[in-house]
Image (tube, rainbow, N blue to C red):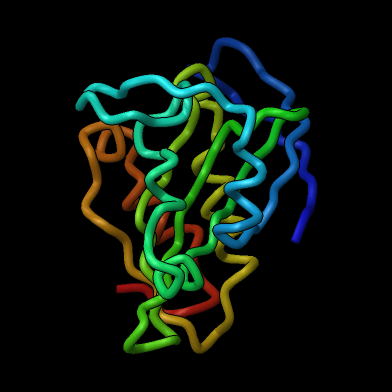
Length: 160
């Protein structure tokens, strides 16, 4: 599923940035093919990830087929570059329960409202009988108050 949005964000109340972004909701197979030309780098933990990200990594596509079938990637695209990714995983035991594995915004694009847009796209995607949960936040996630964004933006289903 593809869509687009225009986002105007006030950063530190100094300047307004106009972003022409699109979003994609992809299966693991589709997301993997979308990443084939992204270089890799090592994150702060020494893990090999896609350039500019902290969690988004080739490892996401190396799980068993059963696990891969339960993954959904929500991506924010600027031109031809992925600038934000949310990995949502469906619980194999309870198909109505989805967990947010991570929210990752490219290091050069943080503090522009991209994570909020990912949550808004997730909210548009979910169905009313879904139950959503989120993983523990990193220090960056806590600083960005993603737990508040999660609770504010997700209103079409139950959250735990």
